[in-house]
Image 1 (cartoon, rainbow, N blue to C red):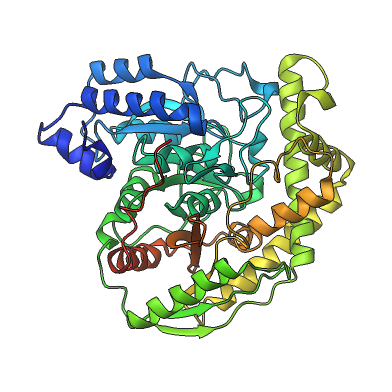
Image 2 (cartoon, helix red, strand yellow; image 1 turned 30 degrees about the vertical axis):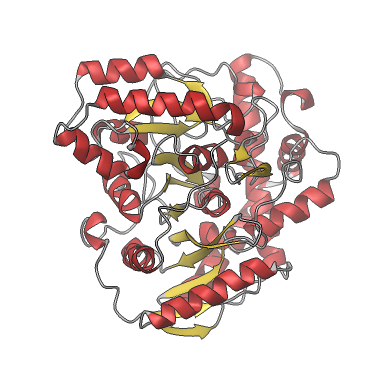
Length: 473
């Protein structure tokens, strides 16, 4: 299939449905591109080609993505008989004996899962540079990061291996790699997609799973295929008013769009990221929306401290559970430098520290909720800077302060909406003078992915990005 890369996921599914191609031909096309391009970008770390062939041979369900190749992130989800390493040598032989619910739903949608993508250890860094598999490189410039922690997924899609890939987001891990790689990345509302049967929530409700895609409609259709509560979920997102795919192309009306270029942390924002927001605000105004500069007031020092408490506690719990499975105590050399530091902070915390942190996070959510009673959408940079060079966000470094400042610069705009649970999307509307993608973020009220999908498809039509492709390496 020489024109394989012209199509998004739904486009490939249509080819299969009309028998213009077979699922096996699509698989062959994806495998050929992985084998040709992965040595340069290091996006795929677990090849499951035999399983994919067996899936096709057994007969695919008539789902919306029947026959479309798909990659799972090597973190947070299980596929029977395969390793989920979470980017860590400590889990390098952790083989699942069941499918996660979201994997079962992806299979029912007809997706052909042929591998797993690289991630930072436990998803803790916003650049994918694990010791276990090595760094994932940005297809736009191999010296730069593809973002994280879903950087492997974003690099795979950006380099043309396939049009869609699974991703997760606990502080920006869908939107940041989408921004770095010139893709569309939607983080759904808290609990929109299931984490069962193994988890009720991720990082105390901050984590959620979805995808990185080239097209807005693929993101919408994937959400239709995976959204909804699972048996035993502790809570779930408000039901949508109808199919998400039906929102694509619908006139969003005259939206009240607030914008800001100032990070709540006070972190400096690069001129390219500021320019991206200002140009996007003008574009929205030209499309008939009411645009004004405004932002919720967030005590970011208190917010970040609370997030670190929750993440440290969860990291320690993860290490202890793995140690119990192995019959020994976790050791510093089991994980990377900054992973161990996070786990140690978690070990030193008290129950009241954790309860206090949850209270802060909930208060932040109230502030964001009140802000969206006055505005329909908030526009910000996705990141404070264009993609970093590889090495800056390595979790094996020896300068924790430099690492932390760089990390906070990547999540300064994204993590707020993990805390509050609101849906948010990174849209590829800008490129730097050096040719690197610079995404802009749009966030909406809790439960309102529909507005984002309407606006996203309007922006996609006004400033198409699908034909902007990185150089072939």
